[in-house]
Length: 394
Ligand SMILES: O=P(O)(O)O[C@H]1O[C@H](CO)[C@@H](O)[C@H]1O
Ligand SMILES: [Mn+2]
Ligand SMILES: [Mn+2]
Image (tube, rainbow, N blue to C red; front, side):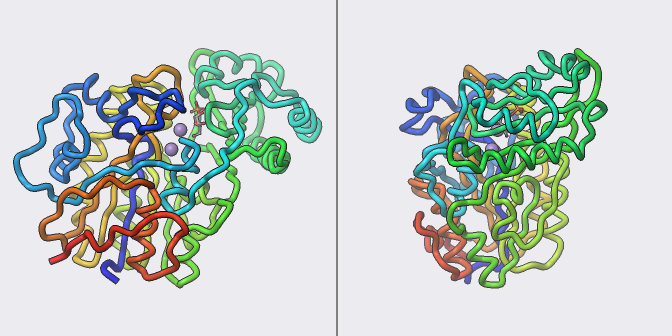
C-alpha cells in the first residue's frame, strides 16, 4: 500500500474539453474550463496551475508555467452512455453504465403522474424539461394559489419536485419524493434520481433553499466504495456523494450547504486520522453556475477553490494522496442549460511525490477507481486500469 489516505474531491462539472463522442450528445465545441477562461480573462488559479492544470489541455491564452508541475496531471474520458452526475461518479468508482437511464424530453407519461397525484393528493403542473429557477418564475405563483406540485425534468434522468416551503410543508414534499421514487422503480420509467427542490420567497424573487434532497437508485453493481468498506477501510462521504451512491459502500457521510462548507468539512476530516478514502463532491460549480450559464460566477467559484488548495495540502503527510477531478462538463457558454460531454481533469498531489508530471490520457474514469483499489489492495473493479505504478514517490 502506497497511501494510507486518499482524498478525492470532485469539482462537479469542471470539464476540460469535448470528448470524441461529444457529437452524440450535442456538445461539439464544449470546453467548460477553456470557455470560462475566455469569458473571464482575469480568472486566476495559481495553485491549480502550479499543479499542472494549465498543461492538461489548451486553455484560451494560458501559457503553462516554465517549471515542473507540482502534481501529476492529466485528463480522463468518460465511456458510459451518459453525462449525468450519477453516471460520472459511478464510473469514477469502476462502474460502467452501458444502458442509459431514461430521460423524458416530452414530460412524464400519465401512467406515472396519475398514481402520483392520487397517492400524494395534489395535482401536478409543469411536467416538462426546464431549468429549476425558470420554472419557479413561470409556475411559482400558480403553486402558491393552487397547492399543486411543480414537477419538471431535464436532459438528465431526473424527476424533480419543486414546492414552496410555506405552501407545502417540507415533510410532505419529502414524502411525495418517496412516493415518486417508488413509482419510478417501475422498469417502464426508471429515473436515476427523484429530487426535492424546496424554495421560499415571493413571485419574482423566489429562492431555492438548501433543503434539497436526492433519492437515487442504487448502483447496479458493487463499486470500489463497496470493496473498501467490505475490506474494513473508511469510505467517508462529504456533500452529495452519499446520495449519488444511495449510501452503498459508505461508512460515514456529512452533507454540505455550499462549496465553502464542503471545502471546510474536507479540511476538518483531513485533520482527523482515518484509513481509506475521503470522497467529496462540490456541487455549486454545476448547480449555481453551470446550469445557470453564469461564467463569471463559475470563475469566482474556481478561484474560491484554488485559494483553499494550500490549506488542503497543509493537512497531508507523506502517506496521503489528494486527487482533484470532475464528473462531466457543464460549459456555461454552451447553448441550453445542461451538462456537456467532456474530458475531466485529474490532478494528483502528495508530499511524497518527487518529480510528478504528465499522466497519459485515461480512456475511462474507472482508471481512478482501479488505482484506488490497487492502492488498498481490495477487489479491482471490472473496468479501469490502475495507474498506481506511474506515481513515483521519493
Ligand atoms: O435546473 P436545476 O433545477 O438546477 O436542475 C439541475 O440539477 C439537476 C440535478 O443535479 C439536473 O438534472 C439539472 O436539471
Ligand atoms: Mn455533476
Ligand atoms: Mn447538474
